[in-house]
Image (cartoon, rainbow, N blue to C red; front, side, top):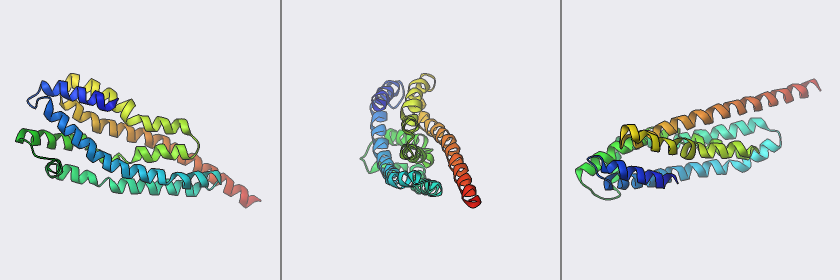
Length: 209
């Protein structure tokens, strides 16, 4: 759904700009492929933690649950250094997918730098979504998995271009990334505090016994 809306929006508002409808569509395809590689690795990390978090949560070993989540988050964030490559070498990355006119590269570089600006926080959402699924809070897990694409990005790529033209699609990406990271952070901090509290109470009870 997001890709269909994205393509239609890029084609429509691209045709109203100097870039035309084809250049934005081509650039969007490249960015989707590059981002897919990055996200596939992050999702692999998050899914790999599921049995570890699930087992330790069921065993009441909440300290291990927190540690596993934070390690997964650190690993996903470390991969997000790809952010630097997206900002410094956009032309080189785009060139790997083929050649084009100077106007094509101008748009591609700008699109890459703006749309992928907050790639550095993109690892938070899949890791957090899987974390809540692992501890049996499936509703929160599903909610987290829908935040970026459906709840935030989809409305933004429809609304922003009305006021900003083709630039609206570019800025929708980092804004959706930022809001998603904040929402995931709020719910996760609350959950980790709750686990810490339960762990502390259990420890104090054991000491008294």
